[in-house]
Image 1: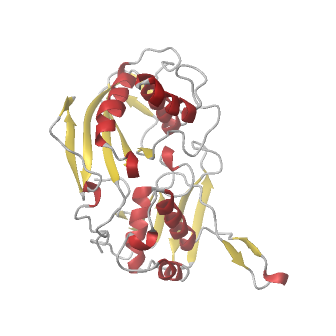
Image 2: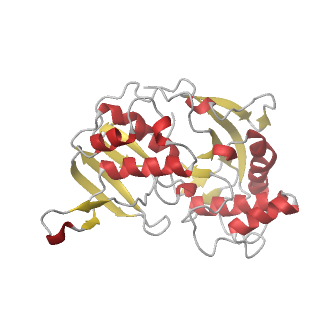
Length: 328
């Protein structure tokens, strides 16, 4: 199944950073720190009226201060900062990968070129003592390359520090020709690539008096699909008009037929509070739901999506990743 003719506006930028110091340690909350520093630099570079909006959202207490508290949407635009899982330490010449996703009205290539990319360049050489702690990433990398998603491919925007000014990124390119079912072979394991914080739907327990609603003990497939539908609404779209095959009630009915065979989750310490990470084995995944799960992995679901939380991979076996959220 292909996405329908009116997909969500989205531009996906793959940023590849090259470490230029002898040793870099990742901070405990790399996505939170990236969001804070990049957001502060953007705010400092904008005109006063636009800067006020960013500063209000960032709740800046000092020039480059970190957040006093973590909120779902610390930027005044719809964005996801997804740092790919990797090592905690990097040496000179090694690469760091992260993806910036801009959604809806915020999917603006001009704003990326005029504000976000220059802010990232400033972060690469910044010398402010607030962020240049020992072995800090900030001020210790070069922007090696930047790619933009076009269907299932990545097209080059920056190569070895040289920007292609002729390239025009469209908010529709990410879904152009993207087949969300291609080569998927009965995945049954769902492994979270980043921590997640998802509200579980209430259920009616017929064994208890009064049939009162109470939260599910396990994270069910229906909870994941429900979170996707909520995410689509937050981004300003109607789930019924997004894909061509099923209505929302039909989607949920299929999801509720799936049983969780085994779950293994633990608290995610390097993430906002309340997040967990792990994997689960499902009895099966109905084939019509696979495109929806693939869409969920791209959009991110649940709380703290801005920091990259809420994405996963579908796995057929421990050695075979099917439809990974991390592009090849």
